[in-house]
Image (tube, rainbow, N blue to C red):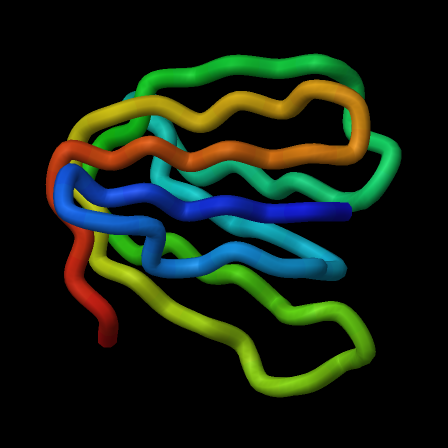
Length: 84
C-alpha cells in the first residue's frame, strides 16, 4: 500500500509500506494492505510505518490531524510531526 505522512511544513514519508500503526484519538489503530475505507482523528503518540519488503520501520511523534484509508492509499495529515 502507498503511505503518505504530511506535516504542516512538508511530506515526511511518501512510499510503499506493509503496515501502519497510528495513535487514534481513542486508541491505537493498525492498517494493513486491503484495509476497508476508514477515517479517524489522530491523538498524540508514535506513528509507525513499516516499509515494504520488511526493511526498517519509520517512527514519527504525531499530535492532532487525521488518518484516511482509501483503496490502497493511507494518508496521515498531522498537526505536529517529529521524527523519532
